[in-house]
Image 1 (cartoon, rainbow, N blue to C red):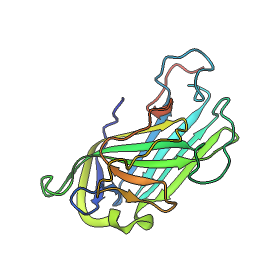
Image 2 (cartoon, rainbow, N blue to C red):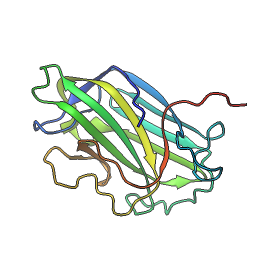
Image 3 (cartoon, rainbow, N blue to C red):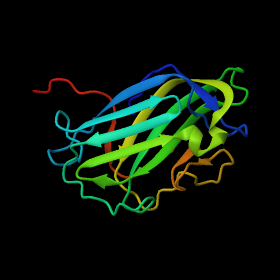
Image 4 (tube, rainbow, N blue to C red):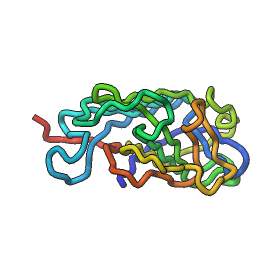
Length: 195
């Protein structure tokens, strides 16, 4: 897993085990690439022809993938078994020396595919105010990954009290480093040597 080191200002969620979400006035932008060595046609994200971006501004997060190859349109019903799963991992520490927030959290989004594109747009603070209490948290690592659908994936498995649901009922801020076991479509990074 490639880690992209960024300095971000985050706000913390309570209780103590809860997870922070990107907040404050900070901005982040990360491109996508496919680091998997597979035969041509073996993945929907093709370096140099597919594109992707993760952006955050304050508590607003967007993820977009374009030019996905041979990935059929999903049913366009939120939170269904055919949704692509994108996960934003952060490694966090609060301004109190880690007394409240210290460790990895995962923001899990489910998304539809339409015409070879995936679009995700959320305002974490507006969707769950518990993610936006005014405790400064910094993140030294951030990585973003998108995966093929996995009907049985449950990012809240274990029932941690720190898991915070977002607006549509299936997206969630989860304690720990969670991700599906399905095929990786793309992850944060860049590609060089394109024609």
